[in-house]
Amino acid sequence: MNSTEANPYRTWGLVAAEADAGERASFIRQTYLHLCGAILAFIALEAVLLNSPLAERMTELMVGNGRVGWLVVLGAFIGVSWLANSWASSSTSTATQYLGLSLYVVAEAVIFVPLLYFASVVGPENVIVIAGLLTAFIFVALTGVVFITGADFSFLRTLLSISVLAAFGVIACSLLFGFSLGIVFTGFMLLLAGGYILYDTSNVLHHYRVGQHVAASLALFASVALMFWYLLQLLMSLNNRR
Image 1 (cartoon, rainbow, N blue to C red):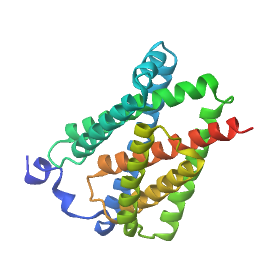
Image 2: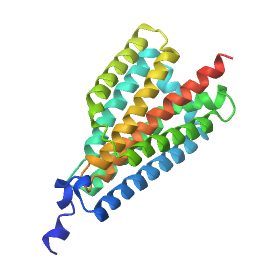
Image 3: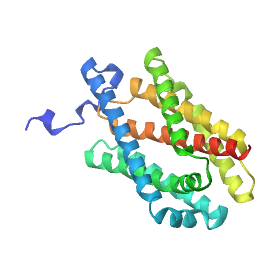
C-alpha cells in the first residue's frame, strides 16, 4: 500500500475552492448526498416514533417536567450537538465522522418529537408536510443564490454567532421566567436559519476542505432542521390566531 492509499485525508490541507474541478465537484456531490441521507434518516426515525406509543411517552418525559425540565433537555441537546460536530470533523477516522453525523440526526429526531407530536395531534391538517415543503423550497432558493452568484457569506460568522448566543439567552429566560417568545422571535429565528443556510452553503464552496463532506453535510442539516422547526411553529401559531 502506498502513502496515498494509506492516508485518505491527504487532501484535507486543500480548500475545496482551490482543488481541481473534479475533486471539487466530487466534494460538493458527496456533501449533498450525505445531506439527503441525513434528511431521509430523520424522516424515517420520526415516522417510526410518531407511529408508536413512544411519541407520547417521550413528549411527556421532555415537557412534562415543566419549563426547567425542557431547559435541561435543550442543554443536553447542545452538549450532544457539540460532540457530534467534533466527531464529524475528525481527520483520523471515517467511522468517527459517520458516528458524529448519525448521533446528530438521532438527537434532532428526539428533540423534534414533542413539536411534531403536538403538530400531528392539534395542528392543522398536513401542517408538517407543508412546513417540510416550505423548508425545502427556501433551502433550494438560498442554495441557488450562493451557487449562482458564487458569493462568500463567511462575513456572517460573527453576526450569526452573536445571534445564536442571544437566542439561547432569550429561550433560557423564557423557560425560567415563564414568558412567551411570540411570533416576532419566531421570525427572528427564521432569519437566523436563512443566514446559516447562506453561510454554510458558501462554506461548502469556499472554505471546507476536500474530505470534509460529512462535517459539511452535518452543518447544512442543522440549518435545515432549524428552518423546519420554526416554520412549523410559525404555521401552527398563524393557525391558532384564526
